[in-house]
Image (cartoon, rainbow, N blue to C red; front, side):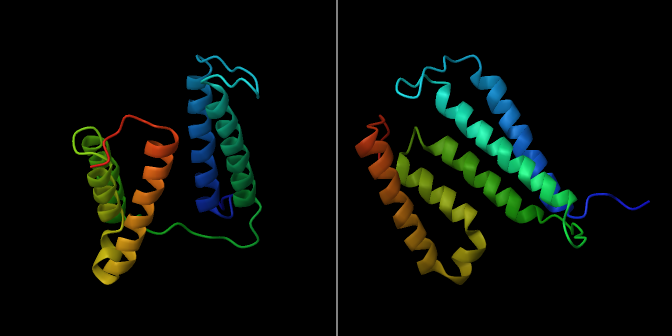
Length: 148
């Protein structure tokens, strides 16, 4: 029996977006919303969750209505494991070692294959992310995070 979903990749990505948006909406409802001029802690996550849900619904619709059928191949487990390890390494290092060490581990593990082929490109990505993180989190928002 053929499936009515022509592009399961797009459909599953949209379904994941909608699920994440639903989780954020359920979590954000416990925080005061405020108004557009006096935003409460629940305002921004709610707006982002609604936008993410809209994108997810569009992706699901495109997955059902695709012009040609696309199959999902084997899932690459090693790259996914490296990305998850990078995020966990960032979380473990951000408080103890600072922003530089945490972002270096995140970029190093997230770009592990590119690091072997194009190390200068990965160094440029790292430098750009460090500069952006310093400007946004330390200079603009003044979060109490150690840079070094």
